Amino acid sequence: MGGWPDNILRNCLGLRPGESVVVLTDEPLGHARDALCAAAGALQAKQVHAHTLPGPGRIALIPAHLMAQVREADVIVSLLSALDLAQESPVLRAISGEFHARGVGRWAYGAQIDHDVLAHEFTGDYHTVERHARRLAAELAGADQVHITSDAGTDITLCIGERPLHVETGILAGRGAYGNLPGGEVFAAPLEESAEGQL
Image (tube, rainbow, N blue to C red):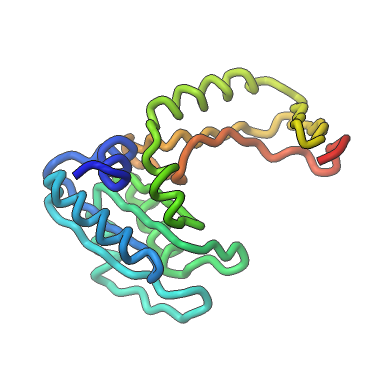
């Protein structure tokens, strides 16, 4: 099978034969949903359930069978073509609560996914991404300030203070793992009004 669906399921989420999978996408990513389902079948998943999420702003009835599938899922993949920060999907919010309460499966979440992300970012070597991200996190650990420069003219200093550093590696194979895809992000929220310089 190969390709990005195999990479996400096998390498990022550690899907094993006999496990169950739930795939959630919005309508524009129906082709990605189908590709993930086919890859899950090729990897000998026990059950594969696919759902199309309602568009932003639409009232959604959350089916009882979907919640039951989430409770039993070993792996969940949700991909959205858009991201509306002002209006989180009620279906995803309900599923997230169920997933976190159970604390057993693994969930990869992606938003603003398009063909280029599928073809490029989702085909990356996430074990290499994980090594780079953890090395960068180690370099930033304990830092009070971050100084960012670029050839375009950015020269800015931000204070982190004691705010926590987060690492999104793309490797989500552990029990209860939840994270964004594509992975490869190391971040902390800077202290408000601490920025000095030019962005």
